[in-house]
Length: 430
Length: 185
Image (cartoon, rainbow over all chains, first blue to last red; front, side, top):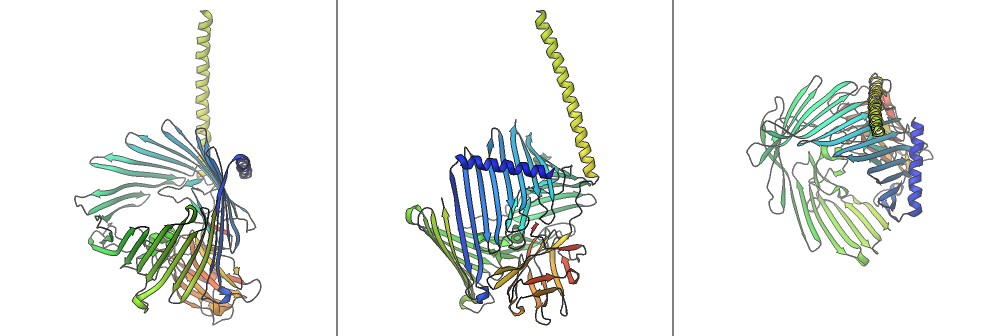
């Protein structure tokens, strides 16, 4: 069964790809990045080498994409994607291969969707090879979405697969050698396609004086799993305070939690990062919530400040964190923002553990031939450093457009230990 | 007129046949669905329960340097929050063709290395790392960077000497190690 599905998917993807290659226009990009570690020993001089080639073929609104990712480890990922519409049907197919390993085939996903009289019907299929820890697995899911009166209702019938939504995260496949990963919507959890779960979510419900309730019922083969009621931004008559209510029923447990949220007005260009404190213990899903015996609001904490202003292509940004034990500044790849460390880890964002303040200057100018030149300097400060003003590290990035399709960039990271990394990048698009 | 009446009767008859067929199809579909659901729910197609795994990546060579990534997958109890690779003189890590004096360890996803020893016993090492912020259910927790001293360097972890703790402040008893090339999170 699984071999037939695999063969059919390969044939379909190949035929679609060949058809589009034959007649469709070509576009894409090639990005390469070479990073050195100047202050390390010669053995550790090369820090990373990454290259990404993306090729698109488009024809009549149907696009196939080939994505090839290389690293020091070798040829890590080869992904094919096809998206488009066929009449009333929306179609998406993905296939993932790991060329550098013994077992090449990793994952396949197919999503088909159609709208019939206001009802959105989607079919999800995915297959995971036994080269992956937890595989082999494959399964289907059927998603129905529509409106009944004022309520929006979503039903997901799981036939061996789960679909990414507010409760489930889909699937992320990680290459153990390089740490590089790819994420998809459909998570196959069992071999075979028997019934494994049913989830129904209704939002926008009203009951009594309460409106905009979201409720979710989830049943699996093992029986009842959970029933939740969520109510966001409950107005208690205080303009600066709202509550989120979560009521959860599980087989032998019922929990109810209130999460207070501070509502602050905009204060010019200064952002105040503040939170309502409770007497609940610090932990995942418990910090600053009200539940069981933890029913007291103990105060308001300001854990950070932000300032940002732009003029004439120049942006100056400043971030300060007072509570570095719980909050951190994410790296420039993840937007240089203040984020709770638990959330950053959950979201897969890299962050700086040592720095409590960021001063950033970014200059963007029109470059040659419709390209863009860009300069970024991020300076971070560390309370434990004895350098001038507690300077900890500076990250500098410069990007120059050779023309509208080719750009060169370089990044330098310098800390009190010296030059940590020097990166050269080239991006070509066509 | 008679032909028209015959046609009406015929069409009504066809509708009846189609309706009966639709009902039969619905019953058959329902029966097949119930059989699928019951067989699935009886566990015929269930995979074994997926244990938490410590994923030891391969040794990646970069010139005369190299690195190994250590990750976790499907860790229970809110995720892995602490890990101890044996003790001094009872090390959980063994390595060959790697210069012990050059080993540096980077914590990932909130993990911080509290203590390490790669010098007391040649070719063996121990360390303790914790995550004070949260547990990690799946993802990289440690990166070992070093200089290689010969061909085909090896990096091995002995599961029996490793102890792991969860974010819910309990020791994780049922877990395994994996050296597969890929894992999910």
